Image (cartoon, chains in turn cyan, red):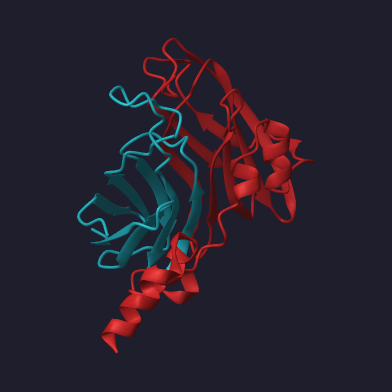
Length: 105
Length: 155
């Protein structure tokens, strides 16, 4: 299980929280050739990202290997308040996963 | 009890990764994601990808705003922002038309999640970036061209 693969910032302006998440992940497409072996490096990418605010799902996404390496994700939540709990989780195609929690500032 | 649970988790396999995550308490059961849309994500043409997400009849809309560079310096990391101003937006999907597998991602918003996403995409060659929005049972689409000097698919 991956750990500490994410950095998150959630700031509220009015009643909308602006959230920025940076994830550490190779996001291999499966088309890149390993320079040493000449074989294709197998596809290894985050395929699901879910964000919840105070336990309610606000964003439920499915991703492909087209998302860049070390993915950045920006999204917004209306009705968020300072102190609200935001959780963002990812799962990849190998079953690996990670999660990060932030308090809306 | 722990050994049995560990064995169960080990034999679950990648297909039930979400179930494993739920068991580990990372993803609450109410937030379980839908099955990964393999047919749509592995589609090799934009038309098949649209079919895979049930948006073949998407109508052009001026209420979808795509922010992307006219010319991408690095095709491996192209910043794209999509905002939907269509009332009742439920989901946004993003396609890179000329990529070998055009569907990049799809985002469902709910409970206050705004119809806005900002991502960074791999763009293999100069291509249209297409956004598909679902709102009120209908699909809408808009595109924006991004020129790429160095392709980003690792080829």
